[in-house]
Image 1 (cartoon, helix red, strand yellow):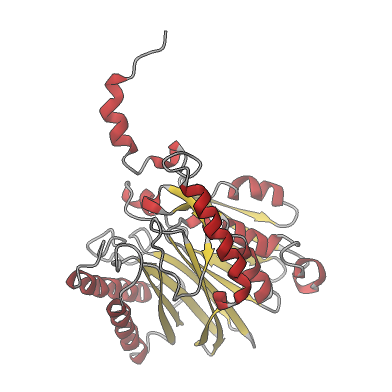
Image 2 (tube, one colour; image 1 turned 60 degrees about the vertical axis):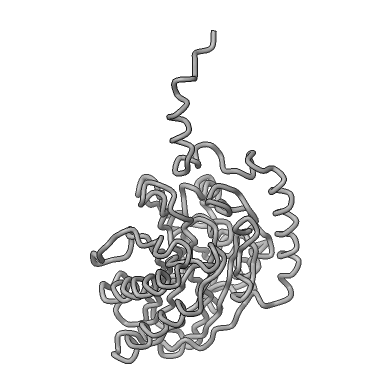
Length: 365
């Protein structure tokens, strides 16, 4: 059967500060989605959080970009924002950049990852959610999962993956896209996705069957709002097993706490620490950045799960490395490379400071 899996997230208020999601907010979201499931709009749903971000995981048969589904998500975020305001949570509704729904939440603040597909006999889904980082954070993991044989041995020894995968890459500043075929175009691909602040992997497709393999949210809040209003805190859906990489191959990239932009005030590089949902409570310097992973099996659109995939003790070393890297970077204080490069500070206080001091700059002799 054809099913659509939608993951839509928003920061509707932090508890305490930017470190956690309040249980009352999660409960309100559950009430909203339960009502829609009872009315038949949703096949199934799961409400969770990553740090201070509310995550709505929904299955339905409305297709991608459905106005009904997006309005449900928007109305849920609005209702949860009201709860956040009553509790005086920090930054209540900060990701809702509009006062009214206009048919689609894209461009309105929330992050969106959706895919429609025919459910397989065994449909394995891994959903990644991140906090205190930006949309390009998935570039390296998706490359490793779908193009690096040192990570995914199936690319070498599994006949149904030997044809490779196609990467749809978005230029988030110029609003353009391009598709690269792996393995033959991986050098060209890396030229672009190695610059994640501008180029983000939006989707990955199996080249043999053209089946969707992965999709991510690429919304950049600062580009939408024209100012810093919080990090993008992206989400990503990956299909696994069969003609796609195995669960172990999908999770393997996160044994490296890769450096991503975000952390405190969205203006620093930090290690992406793989944690359980319970441990997605970034508080040290509002971080370091976190990534959670929930695994599901789909059965007639029903979400069988979740399993908290980073609950495995095998990721303990990655967590320790992330803490060690955090110690090292924090000692740089306001200096690069801990602080983002100058061109990436354009949505912080940097422009105002530069304008205030522009009259004091004089030409060199």
